[in-house]
Structure formats: C-alpha cells, structure tokens
Amino acid sequence: MKRELFVIPVVILILLVVLVPTFADVGKGASMNKYDGEWRYMPKSMEDLLTNNYDSQFFLSADSGDWTGALKGLSDDDCVSVLHASGRWVGYCTASFASVTVDGKTGGLELGITLLKVTPTEPWVGEWFITSGSGDLEGLEGEGPIWGHGYNPEKPDEPGIIYYKVKKLKE
Image 1 (cartoon, rainbow, N blue to C red):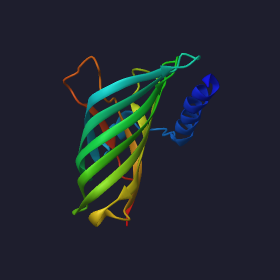
Image 2: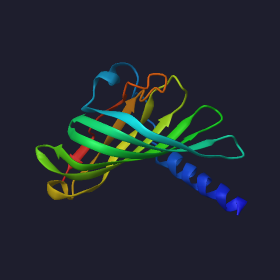
Image 3: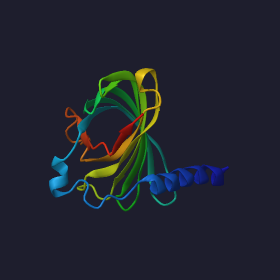
Image 4: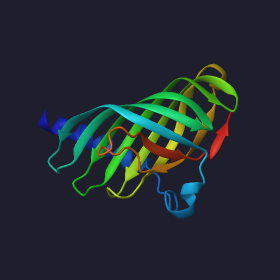
C-alpha cells in the first residue's frame, strides 16, 4: 500500500514534467510586453496533500479566474502542483468556463494549463491548450505560451497575474 501511494505521485510528476514545454525567451525581457491577454486569479483553497520521501510537497488548489484579451470570461480553476526540495514548482491546472467569448463567439470552454517555476524569483512559464468546447466554441482548437509571476501569498488581497499568447486558434 505504501508503495502504491508513492507510485501515484511519481507518475503524476513524470507526466507534468513531460508536458511542460521549454520556452527560451518567454517571460524574459521584451517578450513580457507581447501578449494577447491576462489570466487574473484568486485562490479559493489550497490543500497540502502529502510530502514524499524526497521532500517534494504535493498540493491541490482551487482558484477563481478572470480572463481578458483573446479569451474573455470567468473560470473555475483546479490545480495540482508539486514543490520539489530544490525549490522548483511544477503544476497542471484545468480552467473551466461556463461561458467565455472568443473571436465574438460564446460557449463553454475547458483549458489545460502546464506550468513550471524554476526558482521562487523566476516567473511561471508553460502552455495553455483547449481540451473541449461547447456551444459556438465546440470544435475550437487553440494553444499558446503563458508566463508571469502569479499569486504572491505575501500579498493575499492581490490576484495572481499570468500573461498568455495565442499561438494557434482555429475551428
């Protein structure tokens, strides 16, 4: 039983690391000014799931998101993240929109978001991608890079801000 509890987080971690792309210039210098929208979010809850034998901590969190720019709408976000003993964070989130507007069309939308934060002072980097759509957004495909410093627990009244770019958006 103990071995099974260890294997599940390791498999999740491997999937997260494999899914997180590396962006050489995202989140640095001039690229911070080239974005198509913002994802502002406020945490609703964060649960410390477990710490494994390698001192990696696993968390489950829920956020309320407000997306502006190319994607316009409010989202409910669920995230699984890992803080490694080295200080590196890896995360995967699902942003669910009951109603969002994209290119003048409205419908439901679900995004997958992969995140990586190498050090506490570095910004988050990662990728967002559409996993499903409904209404006018059924069949919509889209993806792109994301970056930003995100939520700071030392400033609990300020939302986290992540910038996003649309690399591909088509039906």
